[in-house]
Structure formats: structure tokens, C-alpha cells
Length: 322
Image 1 (cartoon, rainbow, N blue to C red):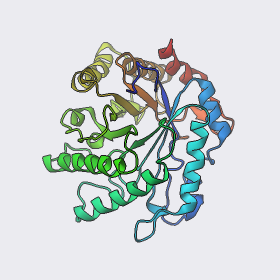
Image 2: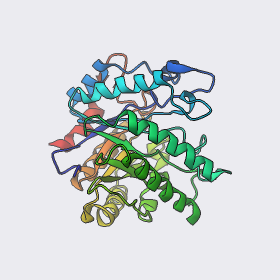
Image 3: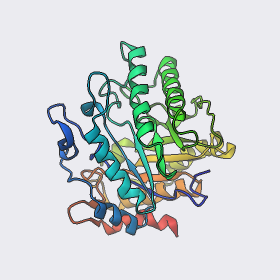
Image 4: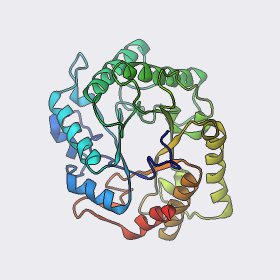
């Protein structure tokens, strides 16, 4: 089983706003740089490995790389494979997903007017992705979707049920070509509160599912940079959320990853580093694998042009490995 206390994944980094970048007016491979970041390179991923990370989450958006029958463009597949190879060739774990096709932005959303069509499209994509990567090393993991939601209010029971149904469809579709690959299933909007209400998919493989949540709490600080962070109450909030995940999943042998977390660079510097270090350590102490969200912009910790990490941010993360 792959979790933070075994010999598998320990600590991860997100190649954000790169293969997940998209613009309906930008065609083909140019989409990768359409959100200001340079193309991913082998040397960039080597820098990530040298910094101490042993896993890379590769968010991918497919909507601008498919035709009307949902067939994925071969050129795009080739580029995705190149980036996956950068990671696997370094001996690291890699995660690929369906990213901004969802997030309440495009067709993968709980309020869709045609749920059956959404399911068909979702299955069509995963059938192709799973087949293309079926022979890859087991260090490649599939993540069904990213932050499936619309708005930020509590979801209805119907929307929670749709999330569960999509997770089941993901597992069933992938298992046809990948009988034992590790698969990652997110809660509604990747929130801990909704993870506690998840119905885990049935799976023909044994011990091959991981639950995913994200954490940018409180958003006013982590996402907007307002105020400061670091009181006992602030830390207790992190502990409480992660302890709930331990009770619900980890104690039952179900691994959990923190697929995204981070603090915007404009936040109070001292508080920002405290938040990053405490969140990373709190996750790792509980066997939850943390993946820092680096978008090359407001959450940046790695300058992708110089391939140099911000030393203070990196130290705040890597202190947890000691």
C-alpha cells in the first residue's frame, strides 16, 4: 500500500498551470504555455527531485485536445507521455488526472443538464487515458478528477451521490486495462467535510485506492493573503481536519493524499512559512502524503526559468522529512 509511512510516496509537488492550462482560442500544444508558464522540461523535474520531492502531480486538462467524439489528440497524448517520462525516469511517482474539464468550469460539473452525457464523456476520456498508459510502471497513478464542484456552498445529497457515481465509473473504466494500478478518488470539491460522507468505490483490485483532499484553510489567509496565521487555534484546526481523515480512512487501511495545499506568496512571510511547515508536518505525521500546489504564479516556490527553489519555502516543507 502506498502512503506516507511506507517506502512509497512521501512528499509531492504540483506541476500546476502547465498541462492543465487551457484557452479555447489556443490550439494544440501551445496550450501548455497559455497561462504564462514555460514548457515543462526534464531539467525542471530533475530540480524537483534534487530538492527532496519523490512524487509529482501532473494536472491535465483535455477539453481543448478532443474532437466531437471525445477522441484525444495523438499529439497531446505524446506530450503528456513526455512529461510523465520526465518524472518516472527520475524514479519518482507521477499522478495524472482530469483537471480543468471540471472545477465547475466546463462540462464535468454536478449541475449539468445532461448527466448521462457527462458520464459518457468522462468514461470515454478515461478509457483512452487508461489504455495509453496501461503498460506504464506502477509508480504512475491515476486521479479521477479535480475539485468536482459548482460554487462553494454545501452540496446537496444529489451532488454528493454524483461524485460517488463518477468515482465508481472511473474505477470500473480503468480496471478494464489496468487491473491493479493505484487509483485516486477525490471527495466533492476535495474537502475533508465531504470526504467523511464519501462512499468508496467498489474495486476488483485489493488495497489499490487512495482518497484525496485539498487544503487551503483558511482561504482568507492561504488563498488571499489576508491577516496572519500561527495561533494555537489555527494549528488545532489543521489537526482536527487531518485527525478526522485518520479515523475515517487511514485507521481502516485506506491511504489519503493532500493533493493540493499552499499559501500565496503575498501573505505575511513569517505566517506563510509557519502555515506551510505546520500543514506539511501535520499531514506527514498522520501518514497523509502532501503535494504542494505550485502554479508558477501566486503560489510559486520554484522559479521555472532559473529552476531554483525559494529556499525558505523549500525548507519549510522539507523540515518534515527530518
